[in-house]
Image 1 (cartoon, rainbow, N blue to C red):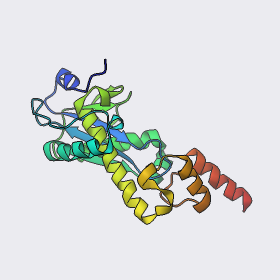
Image 2 (tube, rainbow, N blue to C red):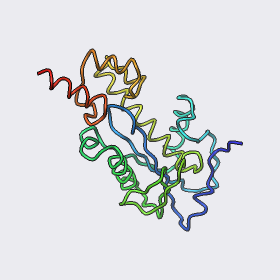
Image 3 (tube, helix red, strand yellow):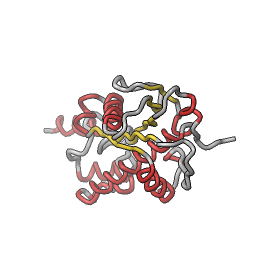
Image 4 (cartoon, rainbow, N blue to C red):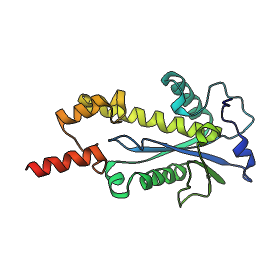
Length: 207
């Protein structure tokens, strides 16, 4: 039986202020990877919205949760853009974005619970595999990261409407790949990612 995330992992930490840390946007072909860090000031507070793995939520529920989290917790985001992603690779860019999110918190956490199987070198904490389904702090961070990134991509879509980023968020959907084929790429794209790298290679070979 599936259960919603709770504060079990936070309570098991020998720490007062625990930050949940997660990222969004490792798979898209363009745009930044965005990380978020969230500290709940109290673990006995009433939470009137659903907070769970952001990927399991409807856009409406996620937006409502985002509004509540940003008004009732200590939170911050960090990101790495396409150029950094190409320089570092997506894994290390994600780690850097997480470090930036935690560094941007107004209150320094005593410990970090990080979604996944590794902790960025600059953070003191522990990894939690599938943490967004287990820890409320990580789930909250996943919501902030995804909602922030989706809004960034929606803003970029107003500048480049032909790619449909407001709908595909930069992921390689069939219609997105068709748009790339028709209109080419721009500086928002991650040139180290397979389909983009292949396109650049083909264009170069035809010059």
